[in-house]
Amino acid sequence: MPPNPDDRENFGMAPPPAMPQYPPMPPVQSAPEVVSDLLYPAAPITLREAVASEQAGTWTKRPLRGFNWWFGDALLMIFLWLVLAVLTVGIVGVPESDSWLIIVAQVIPWLALAGFPIALTMLIGNGPRIDLGLRFKWSDIGWGLVYGALALFVAIIIGIITTQIAGEFSSAAGDVGEELKSNPAVLIIFAILLGIGAPIVEEIAFRGLIFNSLAKFNMWPILTVFFSALVFAGFHFEPVRFALLFGIGIVLGLARWHTGSTTTSIVAHMCNNIPGALFLLLS
Image (cartoon, rainbow, N blue to C red):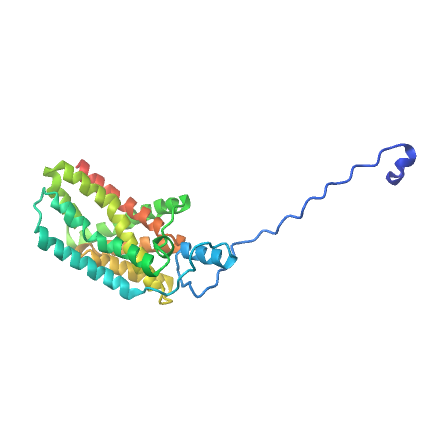
């Protein structure tokens, strides 16, 4: 009969070592549901993160501000863009096809599209990063590439349909690029503005200020996507390309809604514009 383990000492055997006592594992928790008057449907992920940090007591900056700007400010932004565009033409005139003034005429109105939302959120909001959904995360960039490919696909399909209905067509930017080929230096700068500058500026305006100002009305997120795309398409004043721009705007709005990050829609917009910019340079 084998000895009883409890009688080890009677047989000259050392007692077994005591088992180490580890602290219990914490339960796996998902991200807490953030409830706050500062939030609204499809609010940017940066605002949700800031509210969660403030509620957890880890927020070290000034208290977050709530409903401090709305769709009227978005309309004011578009009005300021129009004023700057008209003033630019009035001051510099209509630039010749190979003039550096084309770059000036392109950039100055951007002060309204990007500069106004940034200044507005800094003065009466929580800053552009929080209020406009601007952050740098590799996941946002990855999703931006996915939505950028989708935007290109949608643009190709709608472009084919539009061609069957209205015949061959081009974009306003493409027409300007063709005229700039006599001045390669200006063409290169214009292509950079088209492929990189325009996506940043337009997304701050449309998926930043306009998207969020619509969402603040407690509108269904899908309607926010729809109406922001509608404004985006109409803003370009290109009737033949309206359906194409609207389709791209829907994809960019879905990108912003899905990730809560305007960075995603910026990357997607770049993916949509860069091929056209490269075509201008290489054709």
